[in-house]
Length: 238
Image (cartoon, rainbow, N blue to C red; front, side, top):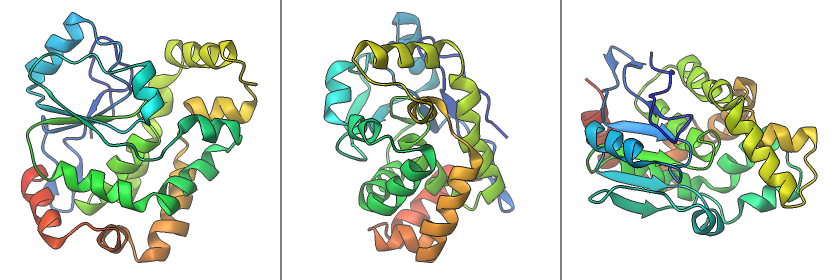
């Protein structure tokens, strides 16, 4: 199972979603990548994206985030802006804890999550990302993997891995940036910045996704078609 990072210079949480067991099949490698922000890709990191064959990047951040730190992509890669919710800073200001934020993403933004999953069914090798690559990115990853038949425990482990990858330099830098902008960095805010406990996703999958009938029903109700599920399976499993 692939929860380790790929060493793409300028990123901390870049991962291939291949080699995950999906029933009697496995997810394919080299097609679907999750990541933190690509705003700090140097020339070497850009070259690494090209070596991976990436043809498209889907940015899940809000308009302000993209404006402040736009992705630094090499020529020839398609860029798609697809915000999951309107304002990340609003969630920080509300002092939402990681459990509440995870519930909110799935409960209130099923439409943009489903549209993101739909995008993955077509196109070439794709990177999807937000700022940390754990909450919005984690939701798209979890729903896609569940739709492909990946075991729930493996989905939880894949989600939880972000916290370890972001610990240290990435976390310290982002907390310092919040303080520099006058944000009161409470333990709740620190949790929002760097935590991805499996218990948070596990609770949300039970109280939101399963309460709506499970991943397939949740996604169908939000607009994912049967044809899309078929294309996802054909493209990403073997």
